[in-house]
Length: 113
Length: 112
Image (cartoon, rainbow over all chains, first blue to last red; front, top):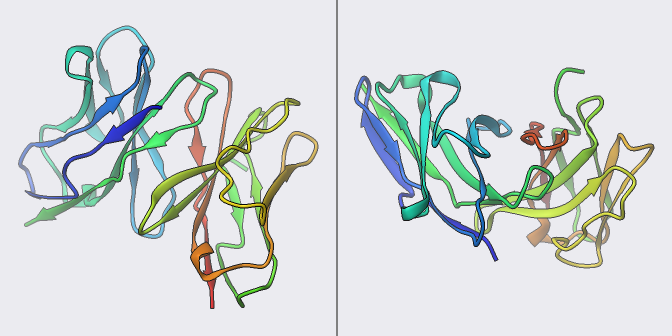
């Protein structure tokens, strides 16, 4: 069965500093990988996805993620964090474009002034 | 509408009552998913509809939970004889072929 691990429950970053959120997955074949963001009281918004091709994918709001098959990782990065980025971030894996998502437990990002 | 719409946004019910949660997917999306988000369990898959195929019900936690999708569009998730452990945010999502799932704002269910 596929699984996703987000090892950091909380991360605090200073505004303007760089950010990296970690995600490791377990899946036998090439997975479909996603990052979603959830602000308080809101649903999940898709930041970016990897299906195939270039392993460095660009998303919305200045986020990017890199798929590393050798490390079974799909870490999310942003060069300069803004206060509005404070939210909970979820990494997810799917077997294909039509299959269900398996989510990690999430990482709560706090942004300090 | 432009996005996935869920109603109600909040629902408080008494233990033992039945509840119905509604999801209007993005027009034209053939796949529809229900997930549950709770503090202890994170985000869990419940049920998945794809076109006219039989739904994947493998995530439903008990036979008190059921869902239907009428006319390939609107879906209703029904929870019978609600229990306190059913308190959670219920999220609906829809997608097109080989694309990402778009989520609604969720329904926060509180069982008292």
